[in-house]
Length: 90
Image (cartoon, rainbow, N blue to C red):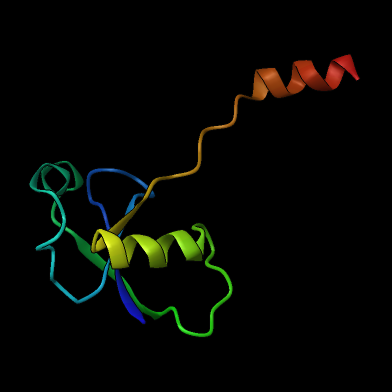
């Protein structure tokens, strides 16, 4: 299974995975508007892979089959104050 990964020019660290290059026919129009003009990041084979760097490979495969796309958001911003306070309590 191949997938094509696009970077969002509007949202940092946001990626859109689709099954075929430049085929956004199954991606909702509103999502495409908020994502911006997709910028090709890479083409990747999912066969034989056990994991991806920043996404759950099984969720990606399932979303591609069921919905025709997978949207990867950036990791949540860590609240350093909360981290510091919780470490102080230990």
